[in-house]
Length: 192
Image (cartoon, rainbow, N blue to C red; front, side, top):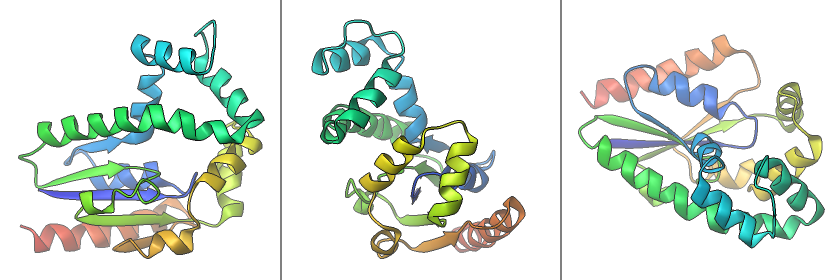
């Protein structure tokens, strides 16, 4: 089994790249999707509402965003609750797919969380900040949240040092697919 971690800065195109890499052939773990699912679980809602003294857990994710915009230090407290739960999900995912040749993981904070040793190959999706912000806002998101999350991540120049491949995603989808196809073909050929 070859574990391939895909990481990159916020709105760099990690999700798109990860989906192209995995295709329909290989399993893909999406950390952001797992976090989204957590916000719908009773256990998580009660844990986070106690920690941040939130009375009503309806729209809890929006309430947490407001809290961390007003007090940036609290993002670490949120991560202390979320990260161990996501890591548990990763272990379950690996166990479930242990017979697969390749398994893919899309993990935004892979390097910040010092998880490099857990992956055989790390691919960094790189994109200019101006382009990333434009993509983020296009999804109807908030510029303050973009800046907050972007600052939580290491600069690309530091992340790249830990990666086996860097894919620059500043152009179009066609270009991205072409680059991914060449990397994927090489791996499949070398590991068949």
